[in-house]
Amino acid sequence: MERKKLLLFDTNSIIHRAFHALPPLKTREGEPGGAIYGSLLAFFRIISEIKPQYVAAAFDSPGKTFRHKKYKEYKANRPKAPDELISQIKKTSEVFSKIGVTILMKKGLEADDIVGTISSFAPREVETIIVTGDMDILQLVNEKTKVYTLKRGIKETVLYDIKKVEEKYDGIPPQKIADVKALQGDQSDNIPGVEGVGEKTAIKIIKKFGSLENLYSFLDQEELQKESVSGISQRILTKIKESKEKAFLSRDLALINKNDFSEFDFSNFYFSLENEKIIDALNDLGFVSLAKRFLEKEENNLKLNLN
Image 1 (cartoon, rainbow, N blue to C red):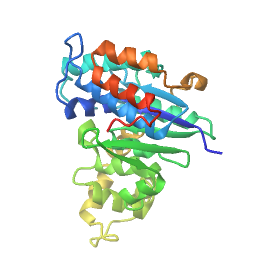
Image 2 (image 1 turned 30 degrees about the vertical axis):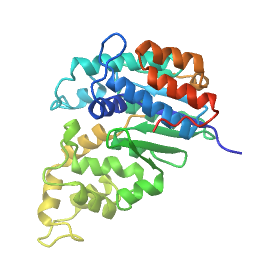
Image 3 (image 1 turned 135 degrees about the vertical axis):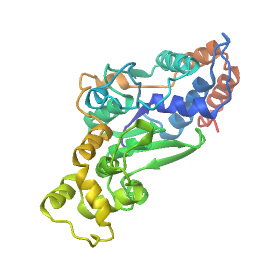
């Protein structure tokens, strides 16, 4: 018997990707609509491919998060989102709600924390697929959770299971990606990491020591010699040793929180394609061609394929 499926959208990352990938389309009201259109395009294509019984869309909450309390410079290097993007995030939430998708948001949390929590607490017998444009979410992959990533705008996709993640990170399992980020840092989120340590070196180190704890247990106990340790230079190891506090802070910032959104009712995530709701929502936006394409596929009893 085929397992039931839960589709979780890391919606802000998808909207951001669509915003930069598609031309600045307009809605029927003359408002910016390219990111909305792109997000819906991706949504219908993935719904058709995955055929989930449960769907939910997580959104970032506005304002500061718990990560800003830990590190006030978190994401400080990011420019303010343009008004035309902010308006489309709100509108996308409204459209998803109209077509029956459960909307998830909680003050102080980012969307990836919400999808992390939901995927963690979802019934064991349900397979979870997280849709995102953010590769950091690969840390959530496990036996019952896969990550469906959008690349090169929204056209190319990759479905990551444990094996696929380990291929990408040279044998590092998903649950150790945050340890890699602890050393590497993340410029896009202004996570400091250890100065001078890039992704390849970070992967090599975590692959050898297994975890940040094991690495610092070694560094705290051993007197570093001039020679390198398994191809890792003494200079790099010294830098890492001196940056212990920063490395553990960086891991805390990179680690997806899975404990702060437990007050959800999984039964609310049940989703079915209702033609009338979908056509009305698309026509209200002025996305008539998208509505026609959807209706034609449904009338011909074909898969919804919006490529």
